[in-house]
Structures are given as C-alpha cells and as structure tokens.
Length: 74
Image (cartoon, rainbow, N blue to C red):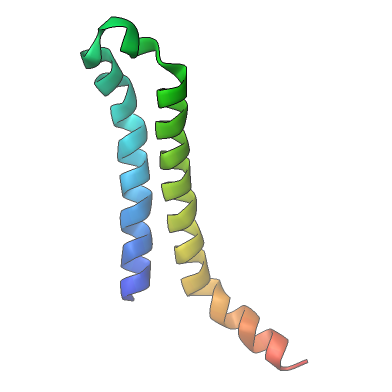
C-alpha cells in the first residue's frame, strides 16, 4: 500500500467523522449558537472537501498512472 493511498483513506475517514460529530457538538453548545447555520455550513463544507480530496487522491493512485500512459502513447 502506497503512502498516498493511506493518506487518502485517512482524509476520507476524517471527513466522515467530522460529519458524524457536527450534530453532537452543536447540541452540546446549547444556547443561540446551536442553530448557527453558517457555522454548520462551514463544518459540512470542510467534511465534504476532506472526503472529496481523499477520494481524488485514492482515485489518482489507482487510475492516474494508466491515464498518463495512454496519453503518452498518442
């Protein structure tokens, strides 16, 4: 297993864990901050970027080299 593949997997897992923790963290804050839509949006965006970056990194590890080889042959 390549280090880049491992790093991509860590990014995906971190993004999933962020998504799972957002409701619990905002619920524990209580008060008016618990319904802060902008803060929730930012955390969900962060999680989506982590997951997307991890998937992209894993995809390029498995299929990126094949695409480069096919393009060099033309």
